[in-house]
Every structure is written in C-alpha cells, then in structure tokens.
Amino acid sequence: MTKKITRREFHQAGVLAGAGAATGLTILANSKSARAADANDKITLALIGCGGRGPHLARDFLKRGDCEFAYLADVNSAILPSRKQAIAAQQGGKEPQCVQDFRTVLDDKSVDAVVIATPDHWHALATVWACQAGKDVYVEKPITHSGWEGRKMVEAARKYDRVVQCGFQNRSAPYNMAARKYIADGKLGDVHLCRIYNQKPPWGNCPVVPDSEAPAGFDWNMWNGPAAEHAYNASMHKCWHHQWRYSGGDIANDASHQIDLARWLLGVDYPKTVYSTGGRFSTPSAAETPDTQVALFDYDKLLVSFELTLFAPYILKTDSGVRDNDMFPYWMQNSTRIEIFGTKGMMVVGRHGGGWQVFVRPKGRKPVVKDQMFGRFPDPEHKENFFSCMRDRKRPNADVLEGHLSCLMIHCANISYRLGSEKLALDPATESFTNSDAGNALLKREYREPWVIPEEV
Image (cartoon, rainbow, N blue to C red):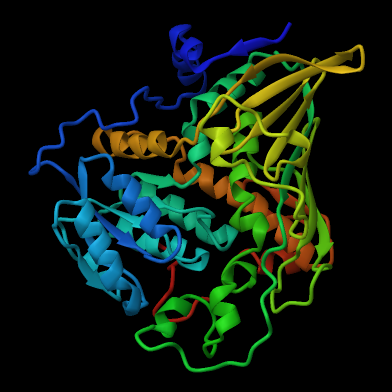
C-alpha cells in the first residue's frame, strides 16, 4: 500500500525539524516575516535589473509587508516609468527612485539589500560590488558566468560578512528537505545513479540579424558590461541565454535549478571528472549554445547524468495546477524531473513543486509507489529565509558557496562541450583541471574596464 505523506503530517510528525537538524538549514513554518512590519522598521531594498524576472521578485517581496523598494535600476530607461508605477501602487504610493547605473544604489547607506535580476554575466560583479558596499544580496541563478568569479563571490561575502542568498529556492521547500532526509536515512539504499533532465518545447531559436543601433534610452555599453566590447545586436540582446559571452545555454539558465537540487539531495560537492557532448541540431539559429546536450559527472561510486532537449513540444514543465494542488506530474513527460536510483528504490523529484515519489518493484505489471509527498512552489519560504538570515546573520539555505559549487558543475560541463567533448579531471583544492590547460583558460573570462572583478575582492 502506498504511504502518503501529507503536508500536515509532515509538520505534525516533526519531520520538518528533523530535516533541519540533519542538514543544518534554517526551516521556517511561516512564510511571512517573524518581525513586525512597522513603517519605520521595514527592510529597504533595491532592485537591480527590471526586465524579465526582476518585477516578479519585487512583487513577491512586497507581498510580505515588511520591506519596500527605494530604488529600481535598469540600463533600459524606457521600462522604468511603468515599473515605478507598479511598485508604487504596491507599496502604498511610495515611489522608488529610478536609475540607469546601479552604482548609485550602492552609495546609499539606507539600502539594506539588493535584489539582482540582471542577465547572468552581471550577477557576480554586481554581487561583489554590493558586498563591498555593505549590502546583503539576493541574486538570481545561475549566480556566475565562470568558475573563477564564483570563488570571488564567496570571498567577498565572507570578507564583508554579507548574507548572499542565491535564487535556488528548491532548498527552502519542505518537500525537498523531506526528500533529502529520506535519502540520508538510507531509505533508498545505496545511491549509485542520478539522472537530471531539462527538456522543453522549441526555445532559443534566434534569427541571425545584422548589428544595429541600440534602442533609444538603452545603455548597451553598460548592459554589455564585463563582456568583450561588441556593437549592439538584437539577437544577442534578446537571446543572451544562448550566447557564450553572456550565459551558458539552458543547462545554465533553467537546468541550474535541477542541478543544484540534485547535488543538494545527494550530498555531493566536486565531481572527479566531467564530460559533455551535444550540439544545436534542431533549427539553424544565431544561438551558440546547444539545443541537445548530455553531461556526465563522476563521483565516488555515483554517476550523475544530465540531459537537455530544446525541441520537444510534448514534454512540459510542472504547471501551477500541479504544484498548487495535491497532484504529481506525469513524470515520463515532465521537463524538469530528477531520477535517483538506489538499491532499495527509485525516487523521482520535481522542482519548484511537483513533490516526489519512490517506486519499488512493480506488482501485477502495475507500478508500486512506496512513499510520496506533494510539493508547493517555495518562493515565499526562500524569501523568508533570506530575511531571517539578514536579521540573525546566519548562512541562508542557498548560500553563495552552494550556488558557486552547483554552477561550477555547469561551467565544467560547458567547457568540456566547447573543447570537443574533452573529459576533464577537476581538482577540488584549486577548482581547476589537472589535465587541460585549454579548459583552465575557460574558467575565467577577460573583463572589460571598468566592469572588472579584481583578484583581491
């Protein structure tokens, strides 16, 4: 008989506390702030990057009632008036200041923390500068563009005693904490294989267009920032996820959530070797990154695989109808599932809600689910964890070091792919390759003045 673990039972049985003790994480039952939201006692935030993800983050932070946005910063001045209007409406008419250059924000000592939702190639530098300015940071995933700059982010956070929460909200989900404890308690047996999937409908097929003038009010030079100088190009701008100079393709953009979650569930850090192959096979495009990719990460007695497809309209993400209710996805055609194989059972986990199920040997040709737990989207819990850590100065659930290690896996896979599927051996002590000078050269980019992360942060 299937044993169903409901959310109520999860809390009542004390599993929540047990998971926290087992993992050393801060787990909060209430997604609202524990601190009174007095008008004079609100946390002052600034949003850096007001395009795609930024407004969603701002809206959800303001729902808490204990914070307000003093600044909105974006290189595209054309979008700022509408963003300001929306924020002002949500925070009682109080309008944030709008700036194109976010360094203005860092000079204001009244700002407690910044929320960074820029394109990926800006995440690290903005985080380092914010730490140096004494600000706590909530930074979207993937937090880095290279392995080297991830280590600099960790150094900056530690040196300036800053709370840096990465946007890996799966680490704040009670159902994922329970799954991690389930594995740690040995209920799956010995785990030797994990498969991570990121499969989506056609995406990233950017048309090839000539360079042109940047749109009016858009500071292309600053948007380009740390990347090598280049004339404005509409495809590079709109499809930056698929350009090596700005990101790492969908293994970095979307799959970083599953990769981080899998690494955390398995309790591993550095892989011994990394190998990746693939290509852009589906549709001709200005995109540089693959639409089909496989990567293998080798750990002690454990193999972790990753599979990417960006051409499959029949494989769908977990929608709100599933993750807001007591339902499970149809796993076989779920875009973002994780499969964990142990000697006693197989666990399938969904990110951002979707829950998990453990399958054992079938009976009568029908599947047998031994244990399972429904899940919910953990954004409120993740933001609460960030605010809680800002107050007690503890490390957050998705601390910058954890974000760095997960992104390092991604960078290693992409480096292998870009070197023609070279198998790379990683030295944890130096976070570099022992067998590839060419690979080591790709662990750090060349920065462009003045957008430079220094060796000494």
